[in-house]
Length: 489
Image (cartoon, rainbow, N blue to C red):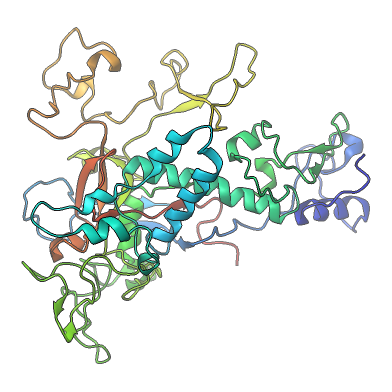
């Protein structure tokens, strides 16, 4: 039955090391038993070098930096107080997600879900009506901006935080499915079974399998699915955290000699101006933003940024990480829930506000429940009872921790006993009455084509409801870097 197998290059390497033998076989330094030997149980240790760089991504070498305000706080919000933090290495898209990229997402969604679940496609559609203005004629953008080929390399807008996160999840599954096809494990599926990475790893994918990997477990069936331990599948695409985005935007690696940052930046480039100060291209704008009232692109014959609205994602000069348009063009969604005093509260290593800890839904015997209608593993929030012996957290939802939860409220009531009962009773942020802040307020960073120069400083921050969208907010995806922060050289 399994006489004819085509293994991935990793499986071939493991098999060759077993049966062709070498002068020295790998063995456990703690037990002395040989690895990758079916005769003694078949514990596998695959050869691994380092993480593959996913499509469209650039490695951002992490480090410590001063996160927060680099420009005068003209609004006196005091919500970006400078603080020293450390960001781990990670990957980030070189450009904003384009209209072309998002249209690919929509095409795939319509082809796979339109018959049985048409509402999925409707939920993923950008709001093209964000271009409308009561006192301006913007209907051409409503009709053409998303789908006309003239705008295919322009950043997608009209996308909410929820839709951007959904795109990241879809991209994870499509990239990992391609990797499995490339390695000869899955067949190319023209009918597009809904591949899901988590479901595959949980052994619940029953799609177009071509050749599973050889299983060295003597009690196994002879073959097995790819596991996380094989190092073949990539981590999830996601939105960057606020700290990651700001760190990448500043690009201080270009000003670093040994452990000294020689010049702190206000923008993703050196200096205090947004024009090129070098002999070549002297005076040209280095970002797409609004110069002043009524001036979106300059004077005919000598346009300053050559963009009345957005511009193609590869426009202008990249920063020292090779990232384009980290200032101007469109503002960008990040993962964080907005709180004015986050910089005082968050941890100084990998800072982030917005954690909701979840676990897979399993029955009393530990068996996974059936997948949801879209083929995803069902998840639930961890309970207080499950966390009663933990010291690092006690509840699932930590968006309000130290800033908006029961213990941090100035006004407390005995009636506020659970998050569900407390909803709408936040004494610190009385939503719609004294504040526009709630748990759905998400941070977006950077300036856009319709912002003044003040907002293109990476330290500035704003927020918007996660279900809303505008004509000047886009996004780019990030991915966690596993292993060495600098790679194996």
